[in-house]
Amino acid sequence: MKVSVGSDHGGFDLKELVVAFLRDSGHEVVDVGCHSPTSCDYPDFARDVCEQVLSGSCERGILICGTGIGMSIAANRHREIRAALCHEGFSARMSREHNNANVLCLGARVTGPELALDIVGQWMVSEFAGGRHQRRLDMLS
Ligand code: RB5
Image (cartoon, rainbow, N blue to C red; front, side, top):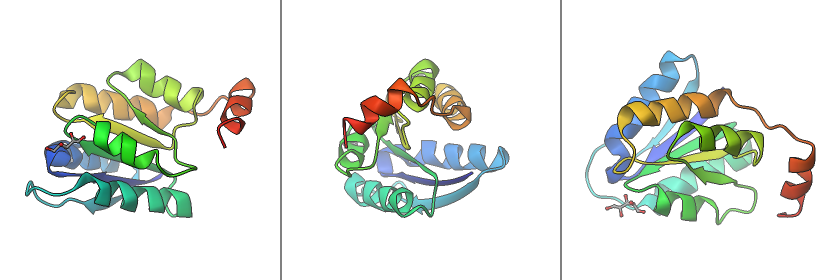
């Protein structure tokens, strides 16, 4: 799967791990930055990842900042983006099965690296269940 991944400085170290994990798992990754731990602004990276998902050039996106909150707020301003801020694997799986989340947000200062990679792994293999959940998504658009 082709995945767009971005972070601000608060998520930089975890992003590097996530990018390596995804590539090791056989996914194609577009790393939109940031490319160093120098202070930067999360809305820039949320926009770039969301634009790639909305254009169809990437199937899904992953956004990481210190808490994941800024990234999720920024991403969910886009009408067809369903961004899920997840702190454990169950929510990550449900965000795909019930909410068809196309962007996963993580907080690098909240969620440790091992748990974060478990979340990413579960999110990547989970699929939308459709049915009654599609009706509910239709009510949002
Ligand atoms: C940056 O210090 C921090 O505010 C940012 O990474 C994020 O947590 C915002 O929601």
